[in-house]
Amino acid sequence: MTNDPRSLVITGASSGIGEGLALAYAAPGVHLTLTGRDRARLMDIARRCEHAGATVTARLVDVTEQTAMADLINEIDAVHPLDLVIANAGISGGSGGGGEDEAQARAIFEVNFNGVLNTIWPAITVMKARRRGHIALISSIAGLTPMPGAPAYSASKIAVKAYGEALNGALKPFGITVSTILPGFVTSRITAKNDFPMPLLMTPERAAQRIRRGLERGRISIVFPKRLAAIPWLIGLLPPRWRIWILSHAPKKS
Image 1 (cartoon, one colour):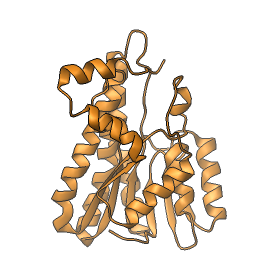
Image 2 (spheres, one colour; image 1 turned 135 degrees about the vertical axis):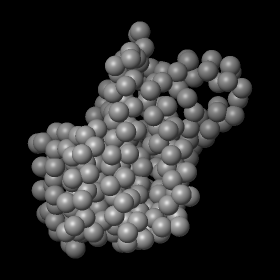
Image 3 (cartoon, helix red, strand yellow; image 1 turned 30 degrees about the horizontal axis):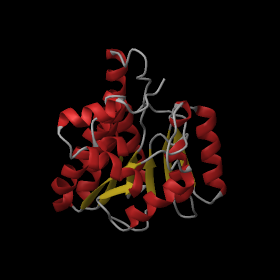
């Protein structure tokens, strides 16, 4: 773990938390590798990071493409040995009305979990050889308890949370820290589609500050805002029947 990373990879950097993190870390002497799906937005963020003094590699790479992600990580690490990799890319989907279908559920898991594996494992391989490095996985407060209103999304984020916490213990002997991040509602293209109240909604800039501060302190779990996180945590302590009944009445994404 390093308090002052000089070479970073951030996936899903074209909006939301990824955008906020890219701009938060942009500074002279820093090399940022940014991926995203929206070329125009990604290039704009890359230019803004360069204006702040960073050097930037911006690529349209789908995190579900295992070979492409491995090639990118190895290419960058050969020139700019990686200090910090943030697996941020994620998707959600509508679950109101008739609920999510099989294709939607599979797509969410493919990006939110398999995309994380495709991002971090090439980095873990090179970090192991150096016996140092920091991996950060973006989960969600929705990963604190199964949400009937978003089955695949909450389950995929639960999987990321559990995997990250277990992986931290497994990689500690190799000098690698794994941090798992569980943010609440953050302004992004995902939350823009929510047509229900989002308590304690925060900007990507503020979320990035929280995340960076937690990573600099080497925290294994970074959860915010605490007041919002307390709700699913407490509900999760209830018997499953009660928990499911309560959460089934929560707002759903249209």
